[in-house]
Amino acid sequence: MMLRLPAIPLFCLAFVLAGPAIPANAATSCEIHSLAFMQGEWHYSDGPTNGEERWVLTAANTLAGSSWEAKGTALSFVEALSIAPQNNRIEMHLRHFDGSLSRAWEEKDSPMVFALAQCDGQSAVFDGVGDRLGEHITYRKTSEGLTFVGDFLHQREPVRVEVHMRKASS
Image (tube, one colour):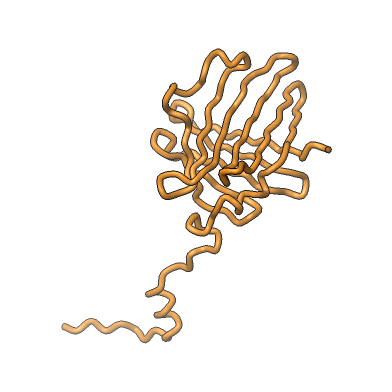
């Protein structure tokens, strides 16, 4: 018995065989300079909660970041971040500390690691690696400033952290 397929226009067949187009913002085209929109000093405030995040391009062509948040007069946490090529991809490594820097939230030798999954010069998505699998961090440049969205898993429950920041005035 011979199976007969319906006639398919040539352009449709070419599309099916080629598969979906790879988006221009695929991680393979992302470089450190693609994240330049993140550079600067960013502030946010939500009632008694105030915070700041800073990103600078280092002489080593990596991004170094720091962040802090205070609730009222108490410093809640301090964060150290880096974005650099590592393991044949661009990775974000970050660690949190309590407000007095006396206790790290992550293990001594295990920072949180996220791999750059996509970027377009105005946004970047980092996907969790290892025990962070299924988590995502997104930075997006907006007309008002910079938005951070963290989709995390705490005890297997999804938790979303969204912060809208404005560039600090000079």
